[in-house]
Image 1: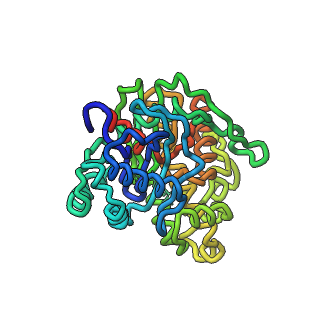
Image 2: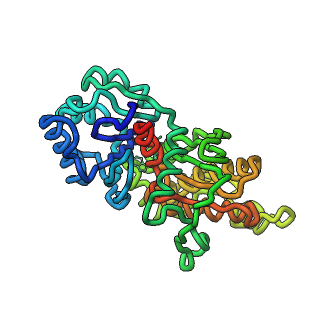
Image 3: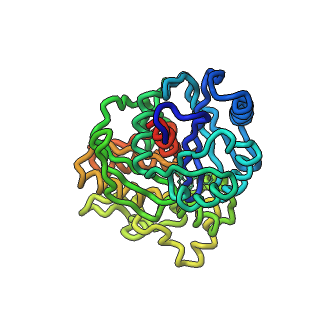
Length: 363
Ligand code: ADP
């Protein structure tokens, strides 16, 4: 945004279709920043953000993701990760106004579609100009930064994903990552082929994403939140809803090596009243989750083959508290590729765009 070090506070904001993600850099020392009045405002903001875990009804700081001991823009400090529903954006703008944000900064860096959509609201209500950056550029920069600078390990995979007892989360050394595929599962899905820190292209995408899962789940089960939807799915049985190969063949489809347990038709049982009568809300939630996840896995696999890439990194908030989908993706990648593809995951899931956006501030 500026030449030299920009004035504090340092934020990166990713305004997505469902969630707004905020990365805030908390410096160890603020004494050299501006006049007394500015300093006071800066302290207020810092105290408010780092002192709380919940903001209002819906804002949350993901404390477990905090990154201490970071060096950014010549300063040392901690990175904090905060999110709230994009639906509450006007309340956030009101908060920025009440904390006197515009006393300190004339502009903030923002990415995601909302950087365009809410531009005039920021200008009108808090006199803030938005410096807009492309969300996929930011995503790649964010992955690159966090993977290299997280003192705890960032990247992992699931070992034995199809075995409840033996399944475990294992650290993956991602120091030499190129080339790799990124599958960003947010409200919708974007798939990127990454060949070096500044060589990537968007190769595919699908509108059947995390937003579709949540939307369908709300319709089918009456649930209200993502957490509730995942909770329900974890207790459901999707085979009550889906039609399997064995429901059609009576066993395996041997000529083409299709196991009887493979899904032949997602939701395929639901045309029959007697099947509908015994499918619970939990079963419907699970079937929705499995359907969306496997469809994304299948598209990702085709992209990996086309791009000749073996590592597939899944990110985005759809994977938050969602080990079911991670294990399904891990299993599907391995199984359908005959073991040549590896599904990888990153701890900071949905925050890479916001992180990359904060880094743009330093340029
Ligand atoms: P976007 O930038 O499109 O908002 P995200 O990466 O933030 O994308 O992911 C949004 C998706 O994450 C939602 O569609 C939903 O499936 C899932 N999700 C995870 N946690 C939540 C939450 N607390 N509220 C709403 N959706 C959530």
